[in-house]
Image (tube, rainbow, N blue to C red; front, side):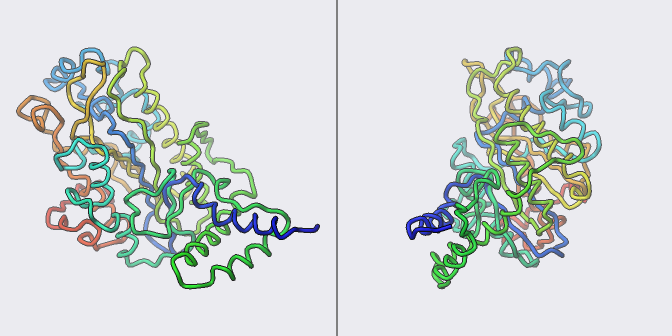
Length: 409
């Protein structure tokens, strides 16, 4: 087969450009004997409605909830019982089973304890890990990877999103993709020769050279996933949507047993300012159904020796107002709900310093108060599951306030 100079150069160019067209938010790998968990962070962008995800089930707070949300409340009879106080949105039924089995824990009235209702500010503060300070040069995941005593090797951080999240700010090694097919080099019959030439071309020590070499390393690491069809285990069936494909990609990477340490997923669209009516099916219900089914099937797919070394955290930048608005939706609020899943988890319970929904118990007399800083959960995960005792490095200024909840075993 003959190859023109133009064809050869086209193949080389496609390899370097592959990183820009990727989708998963981020992946980081460790040495194969790394004893720490793999961490998957799912960020629900837009501020999900915590009070309709995990509403009060009965009592005074139930009455206040129903009064504040006459047309968008989740009927008590439709909720899945979590305990005597709270219920779970029925669209999250697949996760309810994991909760009952002790594999998922719920943290209510949790989140960013800083006075902002700006999506962009709240997301930036949370991902940088420095509330009130957006000038931080690195994200909290980057600082974790830099300060953890365990060596990093292999593919580097991966993100399931169009761009790198701020949690990975300062990590030039992160790549983004939604499926292995997103990261590939044009194969015109001379793939090995092209890669050899590219490695010589990018053999220098500059940032550009190192970026090119990391791209080539990523192409080599991802290549085995493109060579065979993936079949989920244990009867798991992911949804045929973007979120399902992203969870499936992470499952495939975990099963390669190459030392995956961190993967991040972005799932946007939670800014429900209108049309949140439950009796009409509802946009929120559709979003929750995708999250519940895909996350439950991700866990099921890996529940054959992988989940004991897996920790999943689901969070959002804030919750929504207690009272519905004139458009049958909810506006930007404060307190939220976080989810945690894993094999080494004290699940099957709700962790909450619950103040209540009366006016004098609400933040700014309008929102669910944040009584558990999101860094409490991440800090406990870092120290107990990820083998990183350097909490002050990861979350500057927070270590003195850190109090473990007993969520992670």
